[in-house]
Length: 530
Image 1 (tube, rainbow, N blue to C red):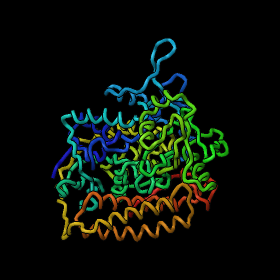
Image 2 (tube, rainbow, N blue to C red):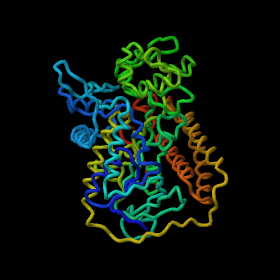
Image 3 (cartoon, rainbow, N blue to C red):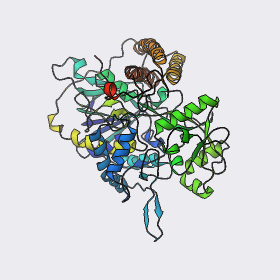
Image 4 (cartoon, helix red, strand yellow):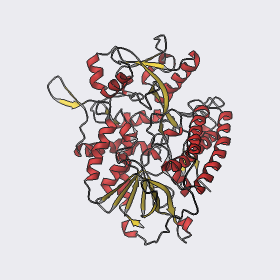
């Protein structure tokens, strides 16, 4: 049994930020199922929304967030994240992160703030169109240099260890983790009083996603099995503009392209967003995604087009170098022609219910970042609020988690008992089930839903869950099998939440209940395993 004061599962902006802070108070292990820098954060192009301009204000940012959230944001969470954001941004910059700046007419320099959908002011700090990658590398360098941080790469968390399951006569608490060493195939026991789930989202539960392959909802599934409360899983955000190119796997075209003047057109070059919202291309993401979906269904087209070719070529190349270079590889010059795009699953707006200090309903278990539900995003995330939430909640959670170190209780945890299992000799079953889950979620639980489709999905997912559990208990565990187990759990949670919300609100749009109903459904959807 290995023992640490803090264990962080996940290595994105939330997990790494927290690890650096709590490492000043004790020993830390970072458990990450791939390399340290392989995370959802590294894929974030747009930037960090934060009030830094004299033309902006906290109140404007708060109101933009509440408006996007369609009546389900928790205002205390919104105000905490917005007002504490600038201090956390300064900490990132102190670590060496250089956000883009622009030269003013008088020769001075100021932050180059981007504009994105749903924002009333320019407030998005960025590093070209690779902000997440730069943040990830900056934090990773500091983490690697810290003597109190142990990095367990290629290690995947299997399950939380709780006192309830162990039969201790005490309040049910998370007291450790079982962790798979992917290289040896052995499962290690890790003891800690503070487990922080910072595992990112679940985008790979859908057939088409902007997320990396690691986004399999691991933290939410683990928390659910441990008995923590889950909230608002029906609100999965679909990014309106993912590159439509069969060979371009999961490539996002950032919303900042529209913020800098990019327009959406159909096959005939006709601009269509004016018929859906007065803000046109700068409407909130849920509206833009549904508009594109409606246009594709109306015309029978496989995609629509995002056109920024009317802007100066030098500006396009310098502002969006990653997008420009990637599109060129597929024969698309964005300085002279439009980009074919389609919506794709992008962000899990909610997840493990927490307070504003990352605490879940299970003692000793915390959650931050995309895996958590703080109440900030409500029914629809405002663009570029996610990275801000991650660093603010990492700070708040670190403050809370370090207060109780003196309360440590010595416990001997049992070793993993694999039982009489055999090596997986039918990986085709794993891959088939993975593919089936993602296809049925795309077809039945997508941008626009119906009860009939949701019920079909629920029935099939119950059967798949039984098959996968049988596979899990009879074969030696692998990372692929664990991800499949987590995927089917998260898919079922999304469907169950969607079925219980008999209205259309934010990212949850159902043809059976097209109107918003604040009287019956103006509250969070919560689930807890009994």
